[in-house]
Length: 457
Ligand code: SF4
Image 1: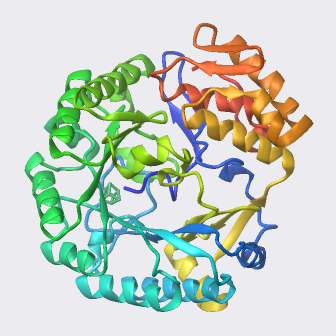
Image 2: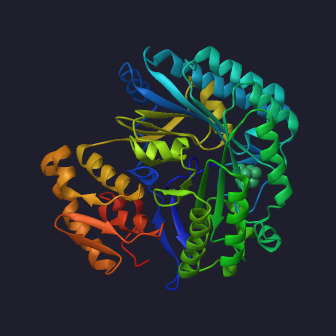
């Protein structure tokens, strides 16, 4: 399951003691709710063409196919059995890369490549090799330091792992969710511990050492005990990072989630306790918390990035802060560029048709104004687990920093005891990964666009 890429910062209805509420994900600011059709492929091309020589960028390829469809999953995916459907999609991906390659300035370095979805392991070995070969023929991938793919441990075959390793895979992301059979039945994803252990063993055997795990809390039938048990199992695998993320219930967008029984979803206090249980187990196992919900093995890339340049919350979890852009390819993919964001057509058919017609499938986006940049920086800091010092923001943005002041004061008034605003500094109580997003709403200057008001969490 992709981190937050194709769904990203859409709003998330939740159950709580006071009923459903809606919170943007804030994987980007402005959120996708502010994207509009006035920003299209030509603007995207111009933004890419103006990347300065020496800029470091990442690319993301969305593979929207899976061998199975899990009820809890909010990612934009489909089950396919027909090779021609996949081949046509790969044609479109290559077509989109060709257009970007024509405008990408020389001297820009692609440092990270991620294949997400969906399940890249649903591709055949031949399709994996073709996609890697054609990507490398079009884009300057010689300086890539990290090549990550998401894998489905219950359906991936050995040949897929070998093919990925053969084209240079360095890291794999595995969704574990919860080991409890009753939880797995409630979310429509069967996955015994042995399948995960086997996937990790095979990945390491073919030379993919960097294993990442996504553990989910807030699932139906989940308990503090099942979350802690799962975290202990995850730690025993020795992954380089663990993301402990909350279940996102969006049945109107991800219709498969209509299979989830809403009355079984834990409320906010239970979710907080579940996150705390996972965090406790991982920290006791030697992991270091990074940002609001990630845990890094000491000495891993994430740990080092957090201790040097710092990290920012992006569509793929935490990313190195120094990257100038993330260029997304595929259905529903979003690109982050210094001037703004652009999003591709979400439907696979629409995406393929548009790329066949014009070499691109950008359907909407947003350009950043100065006020957006100030608010984005503030929200970025909150989601990286940092305090917000308006003095430091003022040093960077001048008088524009004052647009944050009233939002900081309102957030402190809304969440007494958990949020403090003193001497121009906004600080949040630790240990609650939902609190930064709740507070971010107060710094969001485009709430009218998201339709989100201030509601108590
Ligand atoms: S395998 Fe299941 S969880 Fe993973 S992307 Fe596909 S539907 Fe989502």
